[in-house]
Image (cartoon, rainbow, N blue to C red):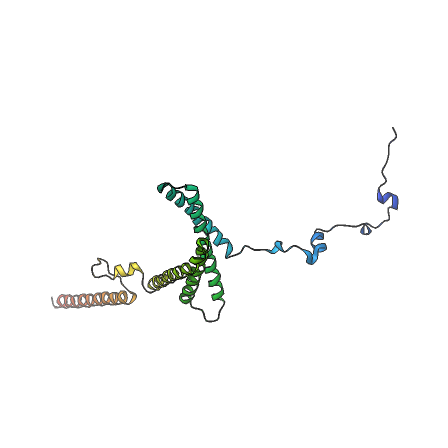
Length: 226
């Protein structure tokens, strides 16, 4: 058999061929060639509203599945049907409420005149109305308006209670209330009280030193007389 030799480009064209004439591929060639045609999913970021809402909805929906199955067993009804119905309703209600509330809070935070307590009331009540209407739609068109009104009032009441608790926590903690109670065995000392106590102790020490100086002076006088 004859040996076949494949000519190398440099040997065929000559040794003086400039290697720069040969086409080269840089590391950034795909990006340079794609340019503005690069797919947009390279720069995508997780949605700050949709992601947490779906996670919360999945958790609450799973709890709804278990609750529906238990209710079906107790009522001697098909547990699968009860579980599916309850899980879907809880998922829709929780995810729509949380997502719409976060969306409303983000929109209200972009305004110039913002108030956390007021924004919480507006966002929670509107989210309750939206989620109530969505959950009512699953039960029929007649339940949309009653569901929106009921859940809006529930959201408004919950937001008002939350604002009240937060205001109390900022003003005075529960531990401080117990410390300042009438029957508390422990008394809370402020900086002013502590400063006053130290001044009284310092005055008492100075008085005792003055008494000792007088006693020493009298002893010296007695020694001189004897």
